[in-house]
Image (cartoon, rainbow, N blue to C red; front, top):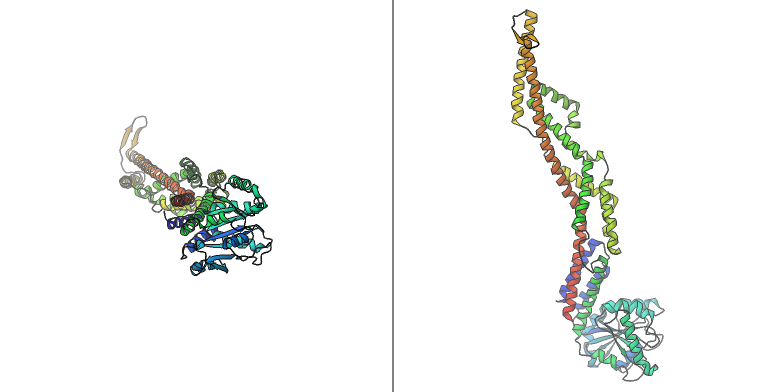
Length: 530
C-alpha cells in the first residue's frame, strides 16, 4: 500500500475527528510535514544526533568526519543553532530540505560513504536555555532518523528517557541509542549496553538498538559509522519515517476516539429501542393523543350536523361556530398545535439524560464533550420541540373530518320529517282554533287519541331516531378516523424523535468507524513496507 493511501486515510480520520470535537492540530501538522517532506527532490535522508549536555554529540560527529565539524564543549558556541554535515555532492539538492528545517549552519564534506545522509548536530535537550530544547522539539517531527546519544553518567537520564525516548521512539522507524564515552568504563561497557537495552525494553522501546562508542579515540565510533552507512536505501528511511509518524498520529486519534479495540456503535439496538420508546411515550403524553381522539370524534359529529340534522342542524352548527365552541372541543388540528400548553418536555428529556450519563464513562475523556453535548438543556429542548412540531405539522397538513352519503340520506329524511311536523302543527292548530273535524285512533291502555296528536308524536319520534342514527354513524366514523390520526401521529412522532435522538450519535459512530478504518489502513500500509 502506498504512502498516498496512508495520507488519504489520515486525512479522512482528521475530518472524522471533527465530529467528535477532538483536537486534530497534531494530526494536521503530521499531514502537512509528511507532504512537505515527500515533496522534496533528492534521496538524502536527515539524521539527527540528540542528547544532553556533555554526552559527546559534537565529538561523535567530528569522529565521523575525521575533523572538526561542530565545536565540542560543555558550553556550545552555536547555542540553539543545529549544525548540518552534508556531502558536497548533495549540497544543492538538500538545500531546500534544510531550508524547510531552518538549518542555516551547513558544513559539507567529500566522503561519499555519507552521500545519502544529512547529519544534524542538535542543541542539548537538557539545556538551561529554553530556546535550545524548543529547537529540538521543533525539529524532531521533521527529521527522518535519530541517534540518541548518552554517556555512562546520563544513560538513564530522566529527561532523555521520559520526555524524549518514550515519546518519540514509537514514532521513529530508524533510530539508534549510542552509549558514548565507553573508554571511561572499560570492561563494563558491555554490561552497561545490556543494562541500557533491558531498560529500553522495560519502557516498551524495542525498535532501538544500542551501540557503544568512544569518540575520543580514532575508530571507536565504528558501530555508529556502520549503522549509518549500512546498505539501507535513503528513500526507504524517509518513507518509513513518514509512515511511522502517520501511524502514531492515527493511533493517537484512535485512542482519543475510543476505538483502539473496536468501533462498535456506542448504543446497542436494544438500548436505542428502549430510549426511543420512553421518549416517544412521554412526548405522546404531552401531545395528548387521547384528547386528540375526543377532538376528532367531536369534529366528525360537528361535520355531520349540517348535512344530516335537517334545518335544525344548520342552526346548531352556526351557534357552535359563532360561540367558538367548535375550536375548543372539535378542532383536532388546533388541539395538536397547542400541545405546548399541556406540559413541559422535562420528562421526555429524562431518558436521554440517563442514557448519556451511563454512556460517558464508557468513552475516553477526549470524546466525552461531543457526547455530553447531546444533553445540553437548551439544545435538547429545541431538538425535541422541533421533532414534535414537525410530526404535528406533517399530520395536520390536511386534517379533514370524514363524510358519508348516509348523512345526506338521513338529512333528506329529516327535512321530510320537519315538513311533516309543520303540517301536523297546522292540523292541530286548525282543530283547536277552527274546530275542524278530526278522527281518533284507539291506542291500547291510553284509549282514543286524536289523529293529529298521534301523527305529531310519531314524527317527533322519527326525528329523534334519525338524530340518534346520525350521531351513532358519525361517532363510528369519527372513532375510526381518530384511531388513524393517533396511529399516524404516533408513527410520525417516533420517526422524528429517532432522527433527533440518534442522528448525532449516528454521526459520532460513523466518525469513530472512519477513524478506526483509517488506523487499520495506515497500519496495513506500514506492515506492507516491513
